[in-house]
Image (tube, rainbow, N blue to C red):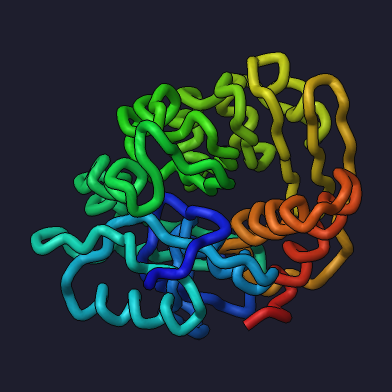
Length: 296
């Protein structure tokens, strides 16, 4: 029998192809470095971190029935992730993300998540057919949802009875897709996890700090938000109550996946009963440890 998950991770599950150079880079740089292929995508990154915090996630996504897809599912299962409910498409290839990082951070990235978008609501079938829930008995646990889904599907989720009992934890896939989250901004059970740039895009302005951004999102209609600003600060706002923490100072060796690590660590901390300030502290520490390269 399929193991019962603690949390559902809905969104992109793909291969990350990351090129990293130890020196600063600029447009047109051609430098030596390392290129790796790792399981990735926002939903996958969150699920992998949740597993490290002893939670059991189930993935809801699209993965192709190609060699890349078989390899990806195998890697996820070896990490202890539940893949029984992943939609395996016969005609859509497995998605891929490619990024270039230098010592000065992310230089450029391309996310090819077209198969996930094309699969649409097929990835949500287990929430309706009784495998994980139904209209009469909807899933009642936490859900980590990412902005790689289409705007139409996010709008459907915002009003769907399948999610009426869920604790929605929502993250954009990237600043370029942040505005897709407007569909969920006022959802009564949604907690948004965004960085400073994404908060500005949602509010159509710029913010000087994570605390200012958190306050701006609450004023815009969000119920609860967490805003990160790299190594500067992270803030959590519930209504008008805002707390802020400064992450530990570390040497940055990678950036792709840091926000997903922060989000997963925060979700796991709250699931384990930690108080607001302790959960925020732990999430900041987890993200700092990740960007320092200490987690394989």
